[in-house]
Figure (cartoon, rainbow, N blue to C red):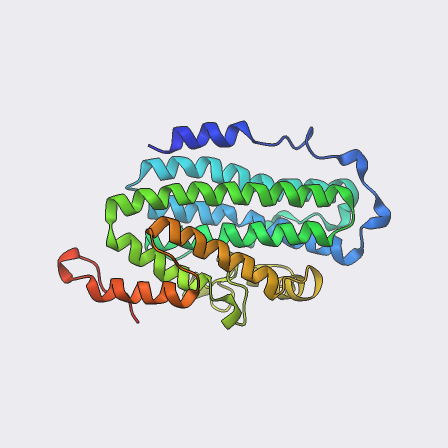
Length: 287
């Protein structure tokens, strides 16, 4: 089991919201209205760890080890929402999300293949780590800069934990896991070809609720994410390339291959599709 070891590792580096956040350093002159509004949107977005956890537990009923790890992930992700709300409560109480606004992002995600979902969230942690690093640079107010730094480090650790479960899945499921991971890896490393930000909170997860079937679509300002990325924190091609590089680097280590480009990862995905036979019990991945 991975859960006991991961618990110890993450417990050892867990930060304290009262002791490790420099609340007394707040400088009101360095917080703009537009910055404060983005903090509210991120607080609500982080609350979506609740339905994501419900999805993980539902779709991994046969995996008690991973389900137990969700107790750590869920706690730390909800803590992200909480610390952002605490910042607003202290310094911009008029912007604290209402319970109704938070509850709006709790909706059912449709069942999906567990391996693909695992890879999707692994890539999501890498992307969010980079988003929050950039957000910390964009902000000038010292307390929120520190908060975003803490959050980015948590997301990196979560990605590392997911990677451990991905390695275990390859040992257990072989080509089925490799096919699932490479398929989603190609998607999530191809953000420059899409009009939307490729993160789990911005992907469609419930057809019956379309067009309000993404977390972002259920926020008070559904268009805020693209504006935050493009205009405010300026998550440009240089930063996007950092995300792609990290995804490809980890896929290279995971699959014991060398992927310098998304095209190389896609060729590997296609080769797996050709090699897999009906005897594996897995349908070939579409080209």
